Length: 348
Length: 289
Image (cartoon, rainbow over all chains, first blue to last red; front, side):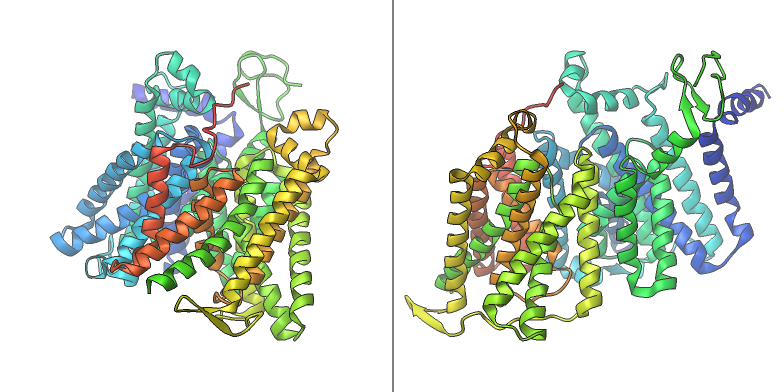
């Protein structure tokens, strides 16, 4: 009872007065109600893929946006998650509830291993080094077709559930929990978890962070592990929804899709990648139905135009329109308020 | 077999060098990673196809128009897209990726998804040391050498070259000393895309053209540039031949040809682990305010 009233109090005083948070809450409530509105298999499938890609995009943002270790090869973790899930089913006969976590663990281990050369490098060198890893694995997948199926991939793996609605809710729950965990891990103002603050410190000034007694190497490895874990979960889900682990999960296109969603939405924020993936992926699918083969062209033009006029990303641009930070107490306020809701400093 | 591989290595290395130079130039001068560089290359190859095959023009005017047109396209892209977001590194990256995708889709719409090829600029072949070498290969090597010498003279002997090197060194100081940084970057971008167009004109007859080929070429070129050190012209040229050598060694050896890219990338990883700044690059110090 006490907890409930606490929760209500938080909602009443920290969520309702800030339009951005209201939008986020409404958005998630609507997501949970989608199957009540439509049970069309195609529409639900688009939502399922979007939710998977949201996990993928947010994990890229946690690894690269927050710590500044710009990873061009995030598809590595996605592909490792997909392939290890599929191979665990093919050779050990494990079911999705076991293969997806184990695939995520494999992706985490790969993340920790790849950071050994990556930790020595900086800036564009790091980006281009990480770009190379999924492409190397892509070559290996093609070179051993009797294990990995070569260009055809590992097919015939089981679906999460026969019913599309159950599948939708499983993926949605995994997405919500993953995003919540990553949001908490990267929350710079948290009293309980230090990682958010430390990731920001590493990005802004690594030498100063090290001089303050922070073992930055350990936190960089942690960032790679978190990025690998959640991208691996996304990859495993993707393989089980598609019923195939194909080499397309390892291509440069896959890596850049995540980057496009994050930067389009707004880098170094959790709502940015969510907004980016939820704008661009359904838009692409919608355009496929309306204009056919021109959909990629239109999407590329949309990305270019949005970045020209709001280089910070669309979610950050909208947030700056509807919210204003109090100059005295740094609390978020609705943009139409005249004075701060906590300290009543003038916002004009 | 081995002799042929050596010839192939020299030809591919020269093409990679020409492409990598453009990418390295625009990175070194403007700190812009232009992911659309090889997309310009593919576009130029298709323009060449359009002029020679569909309009039936002669080679000289096609080449001239292709190179000038692509350089102009590069300048326009810089002026209207990249210049506005120059300060946001991620936005530059993303805009150039989106641009490459847009070019690819435009080529799909304009030319369809067929594999295309162009007649060689000069036909016939000669025998060197028992290997039959098409004359087009020799033309590629000679043209790349000429292009490199012209670029070197341009950078070291002209006023434009001085301003380009000045901006590469320190854009703010160059600006204070009266160099128009924006215009210098515009010219550099036009030069870089012009070099890509020269490469396209040369290899269009020996490679098969298809719209998504920019992606694989981009991987190779990025590897070359990183291997040699970002922004270093000498490094790009040497890196290009190293990568071409690795490719041909894997192709000659009994290893599966699917692993060519894996070994090329492995070579880059090894170089980066041993020398974190590439072969001739400067290890970037932390930029502090």
